[in-house]
Length: 101
Image (cartoon, rainbow, N blue to C red; front, side, top):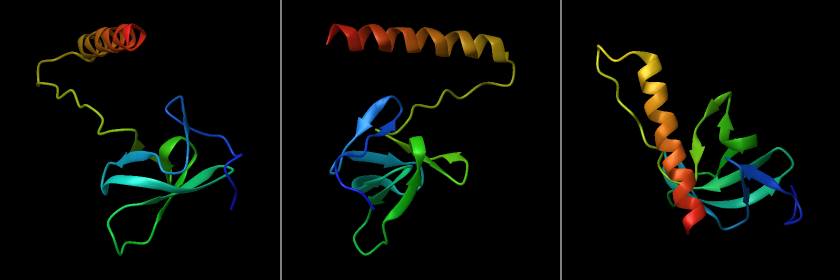
């Protein structure tokens, strides 16, 4: 396992030891170790660290984020294209907000 010179990315941002992250099932955790292609995240006391692959995946499933992801819940009559447009508008607003900070 590596030292602090390894660059690991999560959703476009560099991950460092001690960073707070969020797992879809285990909740909030702290990055404890980094190595090429993965990292170990510590969650509740007494639980073994969880090994996470590149960009927050475990066994091909995206589970790790910087904070809890937002979910857009569709209604029965909603068309996928309409939901995609709404998601794109929200992403644009978020990008503008980030630039203004």
